[in-house]
Length: 345
Image (cartoon, rainbow, N blue to C red; front, top):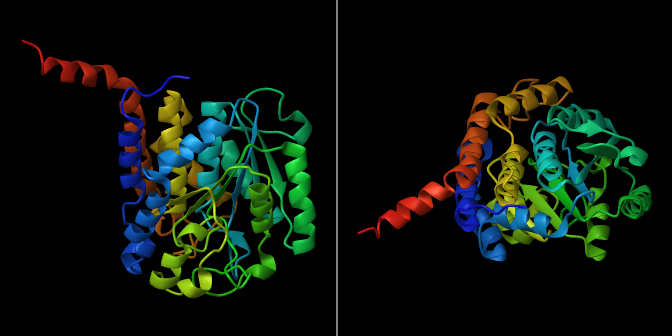
């Protein structure tokens, strides 16, 4: 694999700045302390958080390896997923496949699997049954996961034994709080219809499998490392703060954006800009997700929005990230020549 001509840390800093830009429902309308959450997550990694997650994946995942990508947040009263999560999971799955040659396995509730399928397929990947995951390139698998805790324990062990994943990533996936229950952002309980993927995450951590948690509020799986700040500074944080920690915690303005940041860093690290999508592709992904039944949770509508942020804004953010990826590959020699010219006599 190639390495970027520009410092990876500079790339990671630029990506982090973009994906934590406070321009969403939570930050503008509700005053979420995003900067404080980000600072806490960054302190744990000692540098850019999206880069830390990308490095964790690159160092542990090789061609043909499985990576579990957990996502899907069912909206109470609708029984449908929100648009934040499955799209980010699909973009990251694409980066894992094109950048590392890995085989992503999407995991969610049975009812959300069709939405995950639509998003992963729209990302350009090809669905396959477990026995066919190694036939051809850019395959992906899907698995439902149980709501019942006892069944979840069995399912977790079976999935880990079957696929032997090299990493687990949770993208906007509900995480149980200190009371053992799952909660929506409004503090209400959603345990009765939420798959107990905390169990899968915990079993993976016990087995020494690297984990990444991506969230934007603090009630998401893998956000336990910043639970103290969530509890003290986020509205209803003492109720909703997720307890499960990840090896790397990625905080973003919108969880999809956190996944995009990791994917952008992976594309830069591997020298493969095609591993990251662009703005027009982002619009197609949002449309595919909505057509598969996902809802914008802020508007409560089947509309091309994510967390109250329209498709155009999401696509613009993606294009800005894409420009960083392209810059890391295209302009390295020019920058080096420009700097060397300073010393020319």
